Length: 240
Image 1: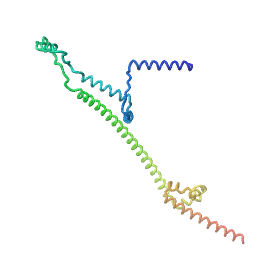
Image 2 (image 1 turned 120 degrees about the horizontal axis):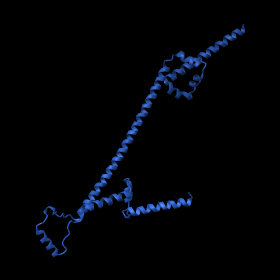
Image 3 (image 1 turned 135 degrees about the horizontal axis):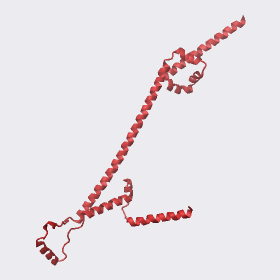
C-alpha cells in the first residue's frame, strides 16, 4: 500500500467516524465558572462524563416529575362544560381515573431534581473514596508482605551466620595455628590484612576474629624464635 492510498484510507475512516457521531450523538457548548474544569479533574472525573451524568440525570428527573396532568380551561364555557360533564354519571366507572395534579411550585420541583443529582454525585464520590481506600489497603498489605519477607530472609541469614560462628568457635587454638602454618597460607595473609577486618567480623564474629589475630601473633613469634634457634645452631655447627 502506497502512502497516498494509506492517507485516503485514513481520511475515509475519519469520515465514517464523524458521520457516526453526527447520527448518534448531540454536541453542546457550555460556559462554566472559572475553575470548574480543575474541580472536575481534581475528582478524577472527565468533563464529558460529568456533563453526560448531570444532564441525563436532570432530564430523567424532570421527565418523571412532568408537567401538570391537567390544564386550566381556556374560557368560562369550557369550564362550565367541564363542570356539567363532571356531574354526569360515568358509563364505565371502573375505567375512570382521578387526574393527578402537581401542586408544587417550579422552585420545589427544581429543588427535588437538584437533590436527586446531589445524591447521585455523593454516591459517585463515595464509590471513588471506597476504591481509593481499597487500593491503599492493598498497597499496605503488599508492603507488609514484603516487609515480612525481608525480615524472614534476614533472620535466616543471621541464623546461618550464627551457625558458622559457632562452628568456627569449636576449633581449638592448635587447629587455628595449624591453619596459619599449613600449606595454604591464603587464610593467614587474608586475616592479617586490616582491609578485610569488617568482612571477617561479619563472617566469623568479632570474638573469633580477635582470637585469630592473637593466635597469629603467637605463631609469628614462635616462628621467629625457631628461626633464631636454627641460626644459632647453624653458627655453632660452623665453628666446629
